[in-house]
Image (cartoon, rainbow, N blue to C red):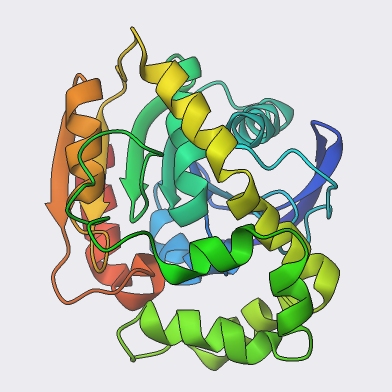
Length: 278
């Protein structure tokens, strides 16, 4: 029988984090992005839990984690993750992150190489670090600016949250879509102006996060062995950003895969993680 998923509420850093835990073995922390919750990892948690204790929290303000007023910059999100691992009795973990979960995972590894055993980063950019010029040649994705204006997007989207989430899910799987149960959970998680506000606070904190990443890499390097996974649309841009600041980084591109790698190509992701983490 597959290991069951335990849902816990863990007080850390002034909030209560909703976290799914499954399996036993070396710890593996999974950090999702937008518009996701811990259920982003639904298709990979079962096979990974055969070998690992998989820990998949909802990020600050998202899913069933506290709708915090502030604290959405990557340094503070890294503190959320660090304190969560401590509260769960973890002194060493591999960390896998995608989209909005990626910058805090990077800063956590920079801050605590003793805690982060191995690092896997996917489908996001590291602030303004060099290497992503080709990806950004036509400017950042349109929704970055839309989400960044305080109070605007949540008012415009009120009553149409499900349609908005559906656009990202379709684009992120190149039209293939995701299981209906997970889609409905995502749509519910981002319904209501307060849920949307918290989601967009992650974008509104991006200038602060970019400064934090620049400061962390000024005179310091990422020493943790890292796998940079690209799909569509970010592709190799993240690897090109990581290579100048990392001691040991490997590139992997997953062909015919959309942005939402854990749901679009879960088998390929499990194979990549299993090989790298071993």
